[in-house]
Length: 246
Ligand SMILES: Nc1ncnc2c1ncn2[C@@H]1O[C@H](COP(=O)(O)OP(=O)(O)OP(=O)(O)O)[C@@H](O)[C@H]1O
Ligand SMILES: [Mg+2]
Image (cartoon, rainbow, N blue to C red):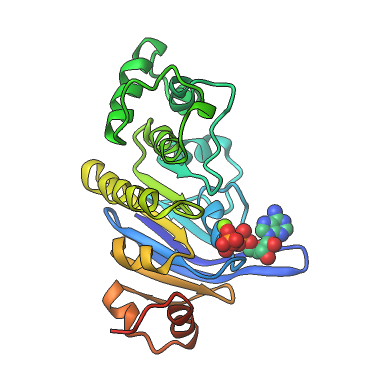
């Protein structure tokens, strides 16, 4: 379980995260939504300490990582996370096999001889076969997303962080990524945190949705609760997302 208590993160001259508290339970699919520039990526980066918060606690399985300076602790906690980056960047000069095995090499003690088998297994989970020898330039956008996802689950993380997983994708690929996210949760029991400005996606796949506005979670609840929210920021966001309240 992840417990976030009074999280605060500033950038020079600006407070982006202004006292967020939340509990993310094992097995949940928790989405954070909000317009561009509200701090969604900042929030998710704090969770694995790619960014160091000003104050507050981030307790991952009982261990507070918000302020620790122990590289050992950070490395151990980071190993329990997979991260699908907003840009999804694969290493262009590496093959699919090398890309997917990247985390295995740096995060685990798994012997190199095991890599091809593990990579094949993870590629199969995201619906790919016989692509290990290809370079990213030879893949379609949808295939790249699948390979990025295979890479983030290669070391079998307990938690998955998805930053804008569907942004910039066509409707068919968006549907595919949506299915992959729900699949990962169902097949691997991965606790998932999705940050997105796609309210439609969030309401469709999440167990709970949080709206980030003005540095705070102004609404948190299951999709049904969320659709009925009386919060002004949520109502406005539903309107611009062309969603009717139910
Ligand atoms: N490293 C940084 N240094 C200074 N300011 C930053 C940095 N990273 C983000 N910001 C600022 O913090 C705010 C939040 O950025 P963030 O990337 O978290 O937003 P976001 O909600 O993920 O946006 P998007 O939907 O466009 O991805 C923005 O105003 C951004 O300019
Ligand atoms: Mg972002």
